Each structure stands twice: as C-alpha cells, then as structure tokens.
Image (tube, rainbow, N blue to C red; front, top):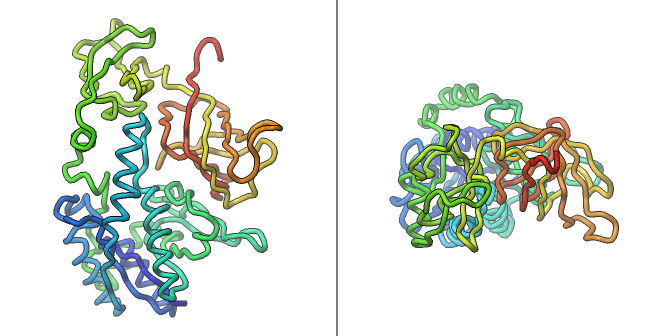
Length: 374
C-alpha cells in the first residue's frame, strides 16, 4: 500500500514508519506544523510539534530512507483543537485535546488529504491494535499489549471508516522494546523523552493560558449548601475533581481537603466539597461512536473508562427508553456497578468488552451519590 506516516519527531512514530517501510509498503513521512509560531509550543520532553521535533522527524525519515514533507496544519489545528479547548473550558467542561487532535486532525484533515493524494492509509505511533471485525464491518479497535502505554481511549472516537484507513504498527510491542528497536535501527530519537501535557500551552499553566484567551470572569466559590467560601477570577480555571489551587484561604471546618464538585459557567459558581461527594453512579453521554458493536437497542453490559489511563468500571450502557431518540446517534445513560470519583463533563466515556473497544461518547452529566439516591 501507499502509506502516509505521521511523524511527530518522537521515537514511537519513527519506529512505526520504519516498520511500515520494512513491511514492503511505499511510505512517505509527514510532520504536521501545528502552529504559525512553533516557538510558542512546548519544547524538549514536553513537545510534539516544535521546530526541534520537525528536525528530529526529518532525520528519522532520512535514516529510514523515505521521502519526507512538512504539512502546514496550523489553521485547522487552532480551529479544531485549540479553540475547542478554550470553548469547552468556557462551558464548564474538561476537554481532552489529544482525543480531539486524533479525531479532527490526524484522522480527518490529514487522512482526507492523504486519500486525495492517492495514499491508502495513515500510519501513526499510537499504542493500540486493530483486529478483524464482523464480516463487512470496520476493523475492531483493541487495547495495546502494553497496558501502561495503551492509547485506545484517545482513539475510540474514530469512526469505522477512519479505522479502515489506519495503521498502528506498535500495538503489540512494549515501549521498552520500541526504544531498543529504534537504537538498533540507528534512530537518534531512541532515548528521546515522551511528550506530556498540552503541547500548545508553552509553560504548562492551563489557567493562565485560558485567562489570556477568556479574560477575567470573577465569581464565587461555595460549599455544597451554597455558603460562600471565596472568589475566583474565572470558573474556566477549574475542573471537576481538582484539589490544588482552589485559593480558598482557610481549611474546611473538619480539616479535610476540598475538591471541585461542580462548575456553573453561567453564574460563574464553583462548588467544592469533600472527596466522597465526587462519587457518581450515573453518567449521561452524547455523540456516540460505535465500532466494536452495533448501536445497542437494549442495555449493554460493558466496562467503561472515564479518563485517559484511568480505571475501567463495570457498567451498563443503555439507550433512551422507547419513544426517545434512537439509532447510532442516540445518547447513552451509563450506570456504574460501583461509584467512580471525579467524573468530568467533556471527557470521553469509552466502552470496552475485555480489550475490545465497543464505542465511545462524550460525558455531558454525572449524577453524584447522595443519601437520596443511595
């Protein structure tokens, strides 16, 4: 096949491209320029789209012996990932920009351009596996063999059509072996640290980044019964489950830590309380994507993962009752067998059957455990 290898400048994408070429595919490497000013993005261990990363990707392509190009995706990235990130926080939600980048950039904008240029597939260094699905259906997405590096959570938003055009050569290999292979192949990125955090926030200060985009929007911090405890400069600076940086200035009467329980962007109110008040048992989610099974017409037993690298909780996912919305786009109600803590609207709920990804949806609401619903 003609394969376009997305090369971030890290070790994973370099080895993935090398494996695709070694398997006999006609491979072309491409690095995505995601900022009009790459110096404003993270560098070194924390980046994936800087000038340093572009140079590392080019050197890796030279060693592999494949053509290499840089594609300018800055405008699309800003619109679909950066602006989405800002807008979601302004709505009181907690987005996952890596998931959105996979959905909108790597397997949408890049894939569309690749197909237009005659490529058959896009290859990335993600840790996930593709297996045979039902006859006539899309490939099945599975967890990686290395649980510590599994990235199926941030890929579960991909549609069946996108998975048909995807290649994940590293899904069956532990990360340590990938680094050893890179060294054997003479790739200089063999020991390059992994990227972390949000690549487009140069100093890692999310609150300050959002304040620069959204300005001051002061409001109250209250406890569960509405008693004012303090004030803030913007509710966008908080996420459900947050403990540090609340800036209340005095401890709770019982001396226990407080956590963010709820964010109301219209009134700019942030509600805080004890850790046990973060427990939820019922989750509502919309924008479902089904790849591992047909959209369920009846309640579906599964395990649900609620954040990247988080635990998977036994659960039942149910479509709306008869007479409500139906079909592939029907929202879901996910009922957990036991409470989960700190579930944030805006994150993905990914449904699994063992290591098979059944589907995913975006969390819109989580119901906290109270004495009334226990």
